[in-house]
Structures are given as structure tokens and as C-alpha cells.
Image 1 (cartoon, one colour):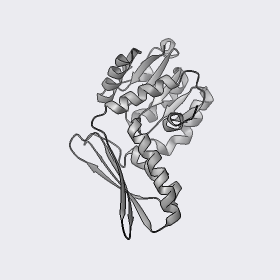
Image 2: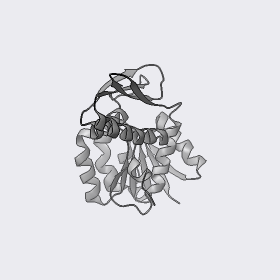
Image 3: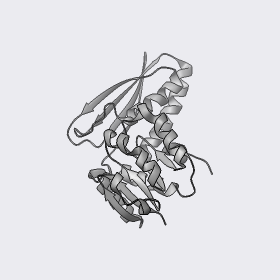
Image 4: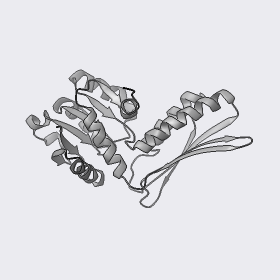
Length: 225
């Protein structure tokens, strides 16, 4: 059975801890400063990281060097993605990353890919994305919105405009629309709480057993046996 360490002990960190307990997985610790975590213990543990963009940028090398495997839920570091992946591959540390670990969002992404593919062939549609989150979210647009925009771009050969809204305590709403001359298609996912993100990250942690290399969660989630 795996052991998990939580990097970032805010609201998401507490939810990850609860999800681990529900699945009977040992939480070997939680820390706001993961660089100070016991290195001998770290080698036996999977680290689930839900921190901030700045914290992850400062810590990713230590994560790659010290832990058995790492699951990254932090967003806002896409501009250094190549450096991060190279660091984990150099250290031989498995890493799973995702802009959103919600099962529903990953299914939404698959649906958006299918719709974009067909509308790209048909022509005449303009895509757009609206994402709404709580006022505490630091990055905008959200990592999920950026990922969905890439999916749309692959199918339609154009990047959609993204509108970001920060209001109240909204857990997360992502709407992908396709505006045509005669009709409109919309696909939407609404998270009722952050619980789904935590549960998905724990699922990802269980996937690191026997895993090598760096992978996006949806790549593993939709992998056929």
C-alpha cells in the first residue's frame, strides 16, 4: 500500500487528507514547506502537491529529487513545463500532472475533443470558453480552461477566447461554447465542491505504483487495458 505526503496544507490539502482516509491510504505527513520534509521518509512516499504557482516553481526540483513519485494538482506553471518534465525525467521520478483531477472535467475534455473535431470539419463555428472560480484562485485563466482551449485548438485549428470570472466561493464552472450562424452548442461542467479534485488526485497517486516517466492524468485515465 502506498504512503502519501501532502504538499500544501490549505483547503485542498485537508480535502486530500480526508480522501486518503476514506480510501484507507496512509497519510505520512502534510507540510506547507515540503523542502524541509524528512528525506529518508520521502523516498517511500508519493507526494500530492496542491500549493501555489510560486511555491511549485520553487519546490519542483526538491520534489523530483526526494520523493518516490509526485502528483501535481497545482496550476500556473505551464510556461516552465518543459523544464519541469526534464527535471523529473532526469531524476527518474514518476510524475502525474493535471490542470483538473475531476473525473467529470476529464470526460468533458473528451467530449470537447469530439465536438471540436466534427465542427472543425464542418466549419462556420466560433469557439469560446467561460470559466468561473472562487475569489481566492490565483491564476486566470484557469489551468483547466487553458487545457480545454488546447483541445479545441487541435480540433478546429484556432484558439478560443477565454473569459475568466472570480466570484464568491464558486468551486469551478467551465463552459465551452461553439457559436454558429444558425445554432449554438454548449458543453459545461460544474463542480459542487473541491472534493472531486481531491479524490481524483488520490486516484492518480495509486496509479504511480510501477509507473515510469511523466504523464498527464487524462492520458492514464482514458488508457485502454
